[in-house]
Structures are given as C-alpha cells and as structure tokens.
Image (cartoon, rainbow, N blue to C red; front, top):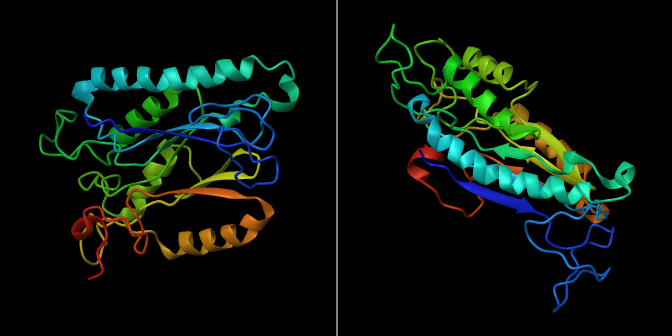
Length: 257
C-alpha cells in the first residue's frame, strides 16, 4: 500500500494580525518560539493537520494501514497532549485545531477478492470501499475531511451513473457537499475541492474535474475571506489545478483536450 503523509501546521506566531512574522532567531513578534508540526495552547492561530495522500485501501492488506495509523496517531496524540497542558482550557483548548484531511483515491483500483459474486469488480468506488475508508478515517480520534480523486467514482459495476456513485461517497463520509470548508484555527480555513466526474468525462475518466458549482462556491468563499483581513486559506484537491505550475501526470489527471 502507498501511504503518503504530510503534517500541516502553523509555523509562525502572526501576532494576532494574520501576518507572518519571523526573525533570525525563529521567533514571532510575541517572542514565543514556534516550530513546524507543533501546536501552542495559548496561540489560537496554531493547528496540526495530518494530510493523507492516496490510500488505495486493499482490504487484504489492512495490517499496512494499521501501521500507518500508528504513525499518524503519534502526531495527533502529541498535539492533544500539548493542548491538555493549558490551564485556560475554556479559551484555547479546542481539539478542532487538530483534524485530518484525506486527498481521495480511497480504494484499490483492482479486484481485491471483496465480492465473491463478481470476481472482476474493482474495489475502488464501491459501497464496501467507501464504508471501509470511512471507518478507517474515523478511527484516528479527530474529525476528518475528505475529497474525491479520480478513483472514488469507479464503482462502475455497482453504480450506473456518476451521480449515484457520488451520493454513496457523500453518504458514507457524512458529507453534505462534495467540497468542504473547515475553520481549523483563528482566521484559518481548510478548503477541499472534489472531483465529481468519472464516467461522463469528456477526455479521460481519470481526469480530475472540479464542477462549475464548486468553482463558483470557491470564488465566493475567497471573496468573503480576504487576506488583508488576516485570513489564511489552505486549498486541497486530488491533483494540482491547471495554472498552478505544478505538473503531475498531466496526460492523465489534467487534460485540456
């Protein structure tokens, strides 16, 4: 199994004004030392968010995912322990500053001996896949957010349309919309944009496509949270958007026709 993890955390004390302040001694304007991967009980701008890349869960190899969970839990438990040391718990000790983001591609895109009635069915995108992924992502003891990748609507034997497959994805992960927005710290948002087209893709089913409704929602969100008022927005998608300058399997995930 491929298990990629990034630890996302606030790096500098912004002095409460939404700006990044740092000097040669690695301290912010307040003089408090701050380090990537740490959280401060007294700093409402600090947070810790483990970010999981493609899980591609194979139900025959769950011991690998248990090992991966233990690595992530050490990060989460450290953050919670730090928050618990704060005496003024009512004001700052908010576990919502510790959560997790999954970037999709939750199931393995092959038959995993999961359905004896159909030995050729791909595991990715099935109800069984999304229920197993939901159980796994929910086992870390903190809230999680998830967006869909190019394999998450691949339940082509079980669902006859992208819309039905997407509804299963949303239901399994208790999501109201494909996209998400979570405030993880003071004036700090985590925003995710979800691929919603597989069967109906114009060029390739494995292109990551963000629909127009999500784009409009995102544009309005960014307008409402301006940087000059101190807002910080971290944006997640399964593949880098066109124009980002980040090139990853362009011939597959990002296609212009």
